[in-house]
Amino acid sequence: MAHKAGFVNIIGNPNVGKSTLMNRLVGRKLSIVTSRAQTTRHRLLGIVNSEDFQIVYSDTPGMIRPKYKLQEHMVKAIHTALEDADIILFTTDVTEDPDNNRHALVKKIKNLSIPVLVAINKTDLSDTETVNILVQKWQEMLPPAEVFPVSALLGANLDKLFNRILELLPENPPFYPKDQLTDKPEKFFVEEIIREKILLFYRQEIPYSVEVVVESFKEDEKIIRISTRIFVMRDSQKGILIGHQGKALKKVGTEARKEMEQFFDKKVFLELFVKVKKDWRDKDRILKNLGYQ
Ligand SMILES: Nc1nc2c(ncn2[C@@H]2O[C@H](COP(=O)(O)OP(=O)(O)OP(=O)(O)O)[C@@H](O)[C@H]2O)c(=O)[nH]1
Ligand SMILES: [Mg+2]
Image 1: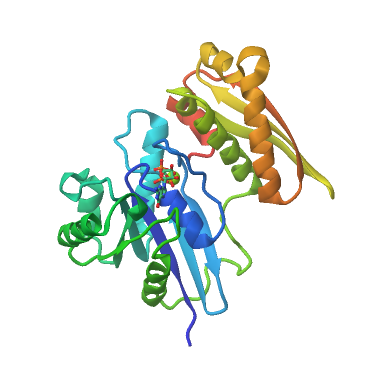
Image 2: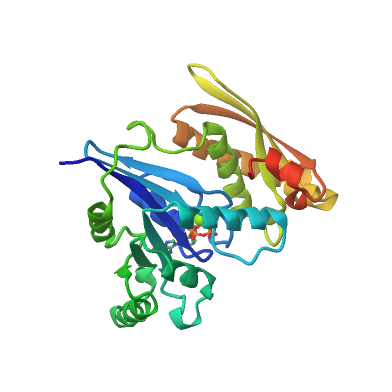
């Protein structure tokens, strides 16, 4: 049998569960997940390898109308993902009304000549009848697409989706070494884990004003020592982030460190420093330094 390999790019509106779905399909938590929209800022690959195939999933940011430069970069990541896909995995959820869908993405997908799979996620929050109606509506909305009701959270119906992906996967040699799981370095996951805790623990605009950068990452046999800087946009945000007697930031550090120890399967020593970098979200030079190309 010829070797199969290809890019399966997951796109959709914010908060529908794209990252949860990719983590499930890859079998490991690579992408951070929170209940807040715009959790994902970067495109991230999750690679599933076997002897006969290599599926390269892409998690992407949710589609938004950009209001500042950071968001423009997020939208650019979606457009790149539309261009280099072998298969599009358009993800929606049971709360999204197809008739009322923010049409930008659907229109773009309609014009593609590659296979499109629609995952209707969060079926655990609905009932069979409602889900069946949604399946039909999405089928009409995107006629060539095949529709799969799933629950990424519970792992329901993902085997059917996976089998279809495998069938549609083109014949190709592998694109990445077979032991490779992702395209991002260790630092990226450190930054994302800290950002996830900030999204979980702070309200309003704080998480959207924050960027995390690893300044040093030193690993020896027993422990990884990590020093990070958290950028905020204003002095007042620095105060909120640190909290009374430093308690708020300490909680971020503790929870992030625990998750890193799981992720790296090693003891972690983690330092966090907060710094104000005015309007970092809107400055090309700063964004470039932060890895938004
Ligand atoms: N009930 C239920 N919740 C889900 C399911 N999948 C994801 N969620 C929840 O939906 C929220 C958003 O999940 P994410 O995976 O971060 O969604 P996303 O599409 O990647 O979001 P952005 O990166 O912000 O665009 C989280 O609270 C998840 O726990 C599901 O199958 N069922
Ligand atoms: Mg996401």
